[in-house]
Image (cartoon, rainbow, N blue to C red; front, side, top):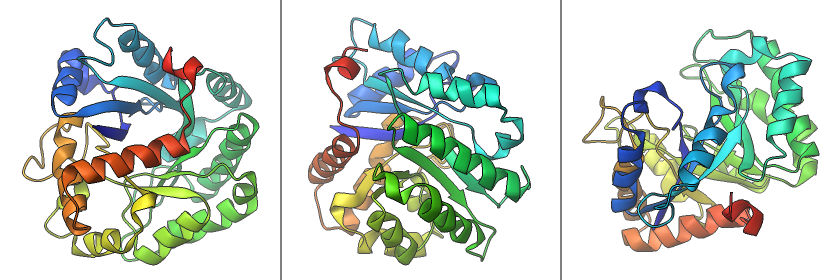
Length: 280
């Protein structure tokens, strides 16, 4: 069974058929999904938790639909919205047993969504909250095309504010090179690959994925975005992650079932899911 380590189940694109999406995921062999709590703005961080509680209370949870966990955080583009009140709300959400990670947080320099200095300041501020609550972080890092600017700044912030916590986290939807990934692994991060791994022009990304140790890999959808080939351009969902997982398995000379076992073990090593979480 697979774990989708990053899906935006609170997206309005699932408003009409969220349960059916989850049932298809289970039928495809996805047993667990981490539902990302960023919403469309900082005021919607709790929606992933609400969905988690709704479906974990379903009689088919863990039998016909995947078990859900949640995260909470402010996305880079929304960091200008961060106030002390927002940080206090994040702090409160990270005390909930179902909320196992802080994120996705990070830096996005690809779009002009928020001033870079504000993104950096609010990334550090959210790291402080996550450290206080002993939650790993889910990092989004996207540089300008042809540059490493966001990664360069990310490494500086991680060294100053995160490495010493020993909490690690996940670099989600990785799009960098092997050297950057290995540096993150050395800091305690897992590297998660999404549907863009399957894209025709992603040869360098596949090369990087092939060079990374199996014990540091995860698979995700980033749904509803980044549907893998041959579904590119359509709404993504957890059932489609088999295409990405199969490709990652092929790159390492493994059967899909072997990769599923390894990545599930990796996820559960990062997030020890105790009884209080399992009964959320």
